[in-house]
Image (cartoon, rainbow, N blue to C red; front, side, top):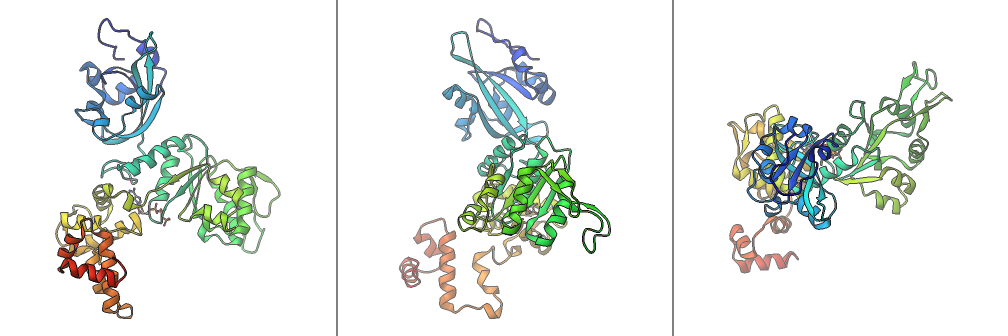
Length: 439
Ligand SMILES: Nc1ncnc2c1ncn2[C@@H]1O[C@H](COP(=O)(O)OP(=O)(O)OP(=O)(O)O)[C@@H](O)[C@H]1O
């Protein structure tokens, strides 16, 4: 245990306060200096920061100004302002490089009632990676960290989590992260693809069956619900479950019990539910395609998984991480020009599409450097139309309209610079835009 340094000032009983936490915890002064740490902290980070009187932002971020002056949320400042505890997800320098940490701060008032210190509790989140050589769920931009903060809050509870996001955004990885960060991490994680479940399959797949309960049931088999016992059941594409089956799922969730097909014996279901969908379930409820009662059951804790275009700051890191994992990607890197092309693309297929683009590029590149010419035509915008198959050829007029629409969407600068890029005068550009109803 480091001791609170300084003289004359009021000193709280740091040891008693900090040892109340199982997680790493430190005591920080109003000047950001770390004055004490508990054993859990010292086991992880050593005692150098306390002995040297270092400030929290120097140790955790290698900044020389407080976080809020470096463009990040500072939980100490928030706690000071509100007088309450405050929680935020940060990327810190840890013993194994950069890592996600859930940071929680409490203001500690002195005898006069004024805040004099803060307790900061640090919970590492090894279920995601802030660097390219870590686990599969990679990211560190604002939108990603916001999502991770929600995962960290929801995971330890048994609340049903609903993951909402476009296809290919990594919903299954996020579901696994919720499981890994939960108290059920040692028990199984069982994914179920609901889009493939027909009415006849639903009950026997989920609940299992007894021998002889239907033609072909030559032996008894446990279902996925039983397989997930003690762990997490992940219902992927939950919006694809037909209405007739939704009531069966609701019954399972409400009674927490089920019967194997061909058996009268009720069994207890013990799982934590994580569901995912790329559909707008609320709309489906309004349109009568999804049961409202089931919607409320599964969406206790909704988490939005951001599309790739909302986390373009993560693109270089994601590319590095994905290339490392691809058979032909290792040792390869993107040229600045290729990265710029990717940054201008909107990735309707999200991270899965990025992965495919990089896989193809790795096969096409002869050397270690991936160049724009190795990227697929869709990504490269300008070349996109040149490779259309013959039966999809557009008239020149249509092609021009299509291309101009795309150029407008992608171009960051003003019209004058766009005209220069397209090799026409500004007047011509305006004329064309008007003609195609774009200007
Ligand atoms: N943050 C991420 N870091 C690294 N790889 C990712 C990330 N997100 C997704 N991927 C990769 O993208 C691919 C798609 O991920 P996943 O299958 O989890 O998406 P999904 O949202 O469940 O898709 P769908 O809705 O189509 O089922 C996988 O190869 C996954 O490894």
